[in-house]
Each structure stands twice: as structure tokens, then as C-alpha cells.
Length: 530
Image (cartoon, rainbow, N blue to C red; front, side):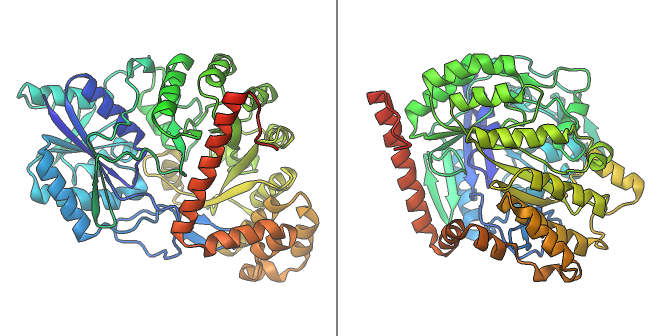
């Protein structure tokens, strides 16, 4: 049978690769995954980028710009360990999932592999889907769209000793021309796929110049978390999102597909039995949008799993019913994304469904039900004017403080609708004429998130015009320290603690939660609030 090896860069969850690995094994093929480096959660403030690197930026509570995906460089020794592992495995094809922020690192690794092995290298994921022509200059094949059936077809062709240039979804460079094959139809029933492969067999982890064989890690989240997905696709068409590009690719097909509640809960129950799982993290973009599905899922989940979980919430007309249902099942934390409080930006630029009153209502419901949440804001948007920023600030103040937040610079993925719009309008993201205004409002956004009494503080800052001209003088962290001294002290301690001590604390907390859950099962009493 065919021998396939996947290389996962900075991602030990590797949801898509683990699914394909399970499917290959189901059909009798040999499959291995090499996890090369871990995702570094700590941001970096060294903003210089390598040629070809495309970093994703955020703004922290102090108003400083930082770089996400700030992953440590892959050392020569780690590349040598990768080479040695591949030599031992002798794969007949090597696959990588490539997203745009990590394309630079993927290109470095691919060139290294191709210098040492005469084996086809295939890239899959968003970047090859929308930028196949650029990608095939580096890799041998680019997988356009979903690759579950594509990798299976490749393995079967290898097993039969046949070429696979004509396999569906592949793009290849031939005589200077990019050839794209037709697409496989989308799989409508996701239950037909096996569960992701979490077994340590055939898994390797390279980090800190060491190789771990039979690696059992399954996530890049905190200790005890398990990442799961109930669906593929999204019903919306947000201009900045890669899902809209996939949806366009599969126009005319049913794009949003969901696993049955029975199949999903069975996977989670089995994973809970196999691993010391204390929390579930649902990575679906729209986990809570279908009330009919949730009504089937919740009782099964409570009976078979009963673990606290994190999910993305999108405000809908029956959000109160949805939140109460999810709270009863264990929803402990959620993402309630704002992005922009400006109706104009949402409609004309982001192409995003937005209901201001419903979003504020949802935030208040979360607080009433005791569901912690965070919100995302996208700014440093060249289309934004001060009135748009002011509307975002108003919504953040109306949300009443006491929530977490991520403030992001607009990240324009090549191939998305907003990238095409900016090209038509002759607008570049690098334009910095408004940076001082953005710097000022980002600091106000953070202050709004700290407390429900932020309005008088912000009004006072507004009246002191000096902060508009010199926004770096405005220190949101100092204001947070005044309104939440204990919370600020805890965060300061976390910053000062060495990494091993933080990991020890996380493990300790996870074990306490697991002990309390076991007590609840045995005694029938919930002692977590005592």
C-alpha cells in the first residue's frame, strides 16, 4: 500500500491532516505525521519580517503592535532531524497544510525536503487554493479546495504504480503553465469520514533540537483541551475570510455541511475515555447557529461527555434560547466577534451580516447567564474614518466591560474579496496616514473593555486633546490597574513567572477540575462552586 507522510508546521492539532491520516489508514495505506515545532503563544514585538513573510499583527493592552504566529525559527539541527525521520519512513509522497502567514516557513521546509528527497511534495489548505500559481513554483502539486478524496486518490494511484497528474483538485506547473484539474464534488455526509487520528503511533514531534517518537500530544491549546469541529463551511460571505473564497470555488454545491450530533458526541466520548480531557474547544465558525441541530446535540453531549466547552457564537433572533441551551450543556466561554461597530464598514467593506442591537443584547445575555466571552475587533482598515472608529467604540462601551478582547490589524489574505476590492480601488494596506488616529482609538477600545464605567473615563480622555496628537502617552494598562487592581496583579505575576512554572500551574488546575468532575459523577453533587 502507499506510504504517505504529512509535515505539520507549528500545529499539533492539525485537524485536517489527522482526518486525512485516519482516512488513508481506513483504506489500508500507511500514514505518518511529523509535527515540526509548536505554535508559540507568546507574541513578539520584533516586527521585522523576512522576505516573503506575511505576518498577522495585533494591538495589545498597552497599545503596542505585536506579531501573531511568532514562531521560533527552525534550526539546522531540527531540519536534520526532519531529514533523518523522512529517510527512516521512506514516504512516497509528502504533504503540508499551508496557510498564508506561514507560507514563508513552509517554503523553507519544502526547499529543504526537495534538496534531499526525490519525492513529490503537495501543498494543501487556503493558500494553495487561492494562490495555486505561486505555490506550484515551490511545491510539486497544489491541492485546490478540500483534499480528503484527493489524497486518497493519490495513494491509490501510487499503490497501482500509476501517475497522479490528472487527479481531481490538483494544480501542477507544466512547461511554464499552471494546469488545474477539475474539482471533486464536496462530500455531503461528513459522517462518512472517520474520526481524526489521535493515536501516537506514527506521530513524531521535533522541537528544541529533539525528536519525540510516538508523540501523544493532540493540541496546541492549554493542558486538557481537545479541539473538535462539527461542520465544514459557513453561510456568510465576509470579504476578509478564506471561507468566502472556498464558497465561491464550490458555487452551486451545498457548502455548509454538518456532522450528525450522534457521530460528534461519540467521538468526544471516546476521546474523553482515551485522554485526560477536561475541556472541549469547538473550532466551528458557526457552532451555535442551528437550533434544531443543537436540540439533538445538547442532551447527547450532557449524557455522554458533560465537559465544559468553548464555542463561537453568532447573534441570531433566537439567541436567548440558544445560549440557555448551550449553558445547560456546559458552555463556559465563547467568542462574540464585533469586528467593526460601523454599519458602513460591515456593509460596504466587510460584507458582513451585522445587527448592532442584537450583538449588544447577546453580550448582556452572556453576562446574565454567567458565560464569559471575548470579542474580536478589526481595525487599521484603510477604508475606516474616525466616525467608523467612534461607532466601534460606542458598541464596546455598550457591551458593558468585563470581557476579553483581541484587537487586530486588518489582515488582507490574497484571493479574498477584500483583496480584490482594494486592488480595484488602488488602496494599499501599508498606507499609514491614519496610524495616529488608529493608535488613539485602539487604546480607547481596550479601556472600554475593562469596565462598565468606561464612558466617563473615555470622555475625560477625549477632552484632553493631547492624547489624540500623542496617543503613546495614553496607557490603557495603567487604567486597568486602577479599575481592576487584583486582576492586573495576577496578569503581572503570570508575565513574570518562568514558563515551566506556568505549565505546572496549568496542569495543576486541569487536575483539580478533573477531580471535581469525577466527584460529580460519583456523588451526583456539583462542588465546583463551593
